[in-house]
Image 1: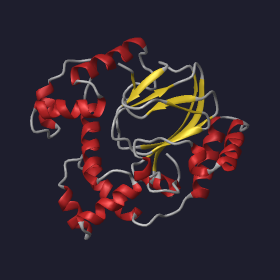
Image 2: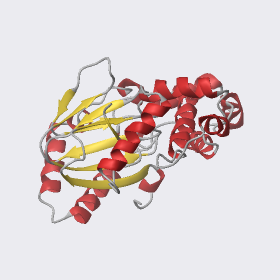
Image 3: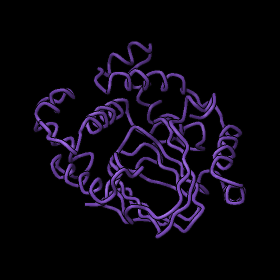
Image 4: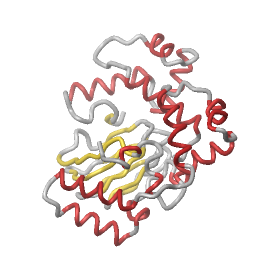
Length: 273
């Protein structure tokens, strides 16, 4: 966990090195944003099934996605990264988050060529993972700013998260003392999506993490406990978020568990179907 004030913006920082479990992984949408500073061979990102993948040499910045995306690893990978809370990337962006929705960009496009090259050099020549992550924390702290509306969006998003997405969006704007239009504009600017979309993503994510792929699954009970209208609604939402049916999703998860038992990446990324 990073120190204050970064802890209000970041879920975790990580260091990744070695041979990935699969060359191509699918990542369903999650209530999270991502920064990767790449220190190895380029990787590829495909932000949706209807667009081509693109190569990223210096790393990438991904605001909260609204659809599944693919991450293509080189044979060996080395990088440091940050998993941000949905609103946590906004203080480090020079543009509204909505402009980057489902459109990953390079670190250079966000922080500039010379600054990115200097950061990558410093990271690559630092002694070890702990020192690298400390350096990245220092860089983020140096760049930290407070965009207008961050307090509102952070508080409201916290209410959404605490409810697992099961909250009336109209009640949120009323409790915050702002119009629904104003709340939507702030969310789009700082997260890239509307409060309703964030709530849907929190609910879907909580539901998926409640699935135990190693055991039997009662889909009807799972859908009911998650607050979906019925199992058909749940299935539609599942396909909208992952491109897979619930049963196919579990089959792919079981494949990961079978082929890479105990792997650190098990739980959210999936081998492409």
